[in-house]
Image (cartoon, rainbow, N blue to C red; front, side, top):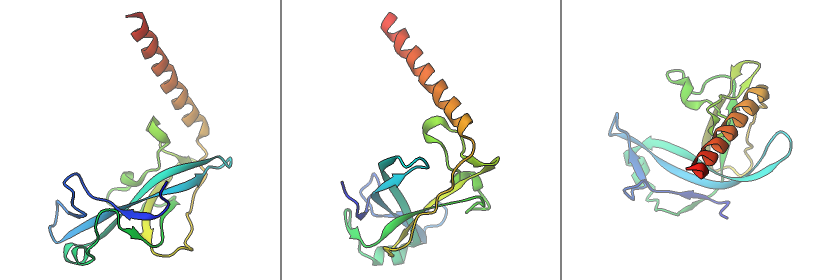
Length: 155
């Protein structure tokens, strides 16, 4: 279990990822195993990641390698206003694999992960109010999975 923030590489083994839209810009992906506590106090250790954007020149100048440990934390921020006005759906908070967008009184929750060198910055979570929709989606998924297993056993 690694609670430190570490630098990762893409499938090609590169730390600096160059933007497809503009070769002058890119990002470095970092990750961290982090304890997350839900609204009912249930704890789980979750692997979270964040992208550190910048110019390719600056990012390459860091000389970071795969596995380099960085000070600080990955901060999770949830809000009711989009982080990206051009593509707000990109940051929807979704309930697991259900595809259901978590909402507060019908308004979608937006979620963004960022890297911070500060050890004192805190996560900001919003409690969703569409619990029944999420429970129904989970129940449907479990029911479908059970039916698939039973069909496989019968064949």
